[in-house]
Amino acid sequence: MNSLLPPAPVSQSSCFLLDITAMLPVLEGVVMELQDCALPLLRDIIATDMEEVAFKDLDAAILVGSMPRKEGMERKDLLKANVAIFKSQGSALEKFSKKTVKVLVVGNPANTNCLVAAKSAPSIPKANFSCLTRLDHNRARSQVAMRCGVPATHVKNVIIWGNHSSTQYPDVHHCMVNMSGSELTCFDAIKDEAWLKGEFIATVQQRGAAVIKARKLSSAMSAAKAICDHMRDIWTGTPEGEFVSMGVYSTGNSYGVPDDLIYSFPVQIHKDKSWKIVDGLGINSFSQAKMDATAAELIEERDTALAFLGV
Image (cartoon, rainbow, N blue to C red; front, top):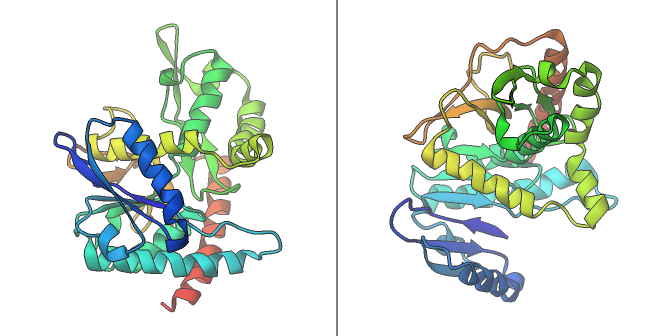
């Protein structure tokens, strides 16, 4: 299912829900749930299986639906199936949506799916496309907060570098923690470098799998919260002195990440809905190796996907 939401900060807006024809009866349940939320900015909800209806004049598109990996499926088969989905949706964005539309890709493999969608909508700026690594960002922030015994709001500037996969690099070298009114570096607040460079990273990388193991389903509430966080910040901007993690187009970055990838960086978002990668952060050899490893995975994914896309 894809949720295509043109948000309005003041006036009410319409919500378009797109799914395949066979799932329209189920989609009606989602419509009822949205109605029951009594959302103040929601005017009406249109459930459809027609792209020309769902993508018409959108201000924002949240692309949730993707082909999940099934038992026995090779990664290249997964990528091939998702290329078809996101080529179709990118083409629909190109044909029907506003050129100012902000597109968030959630369906996995999110980074590469986002790249396929962006390449399939050539007249929409690539800066308008991003993929969700805010869930990983929130996970990292929460792990630090729990370790320090403080609210998550006391932790800022964690970074997720790279792919939304088990190769992602949760980086706390630039993270600050408010402890009893004083801001400390994450390393000074936790005082356990071995944990920060070992168990912490593995916990964040494997958190999605851990959730599936525990509840037999993938992340739901936490993913929805991360989507809301991501889109809210695009519309309202990030606080002064803080940055968040987003998968964005890599071309022209200052960290040596190869061009033509959707790669998660620390970004600051302005009030006009534009964003910039935070430049000038020190990268040590430990971090560089992690960043290179996740970039290598994304290059492999990209090259496989683009071969199927035919570009």
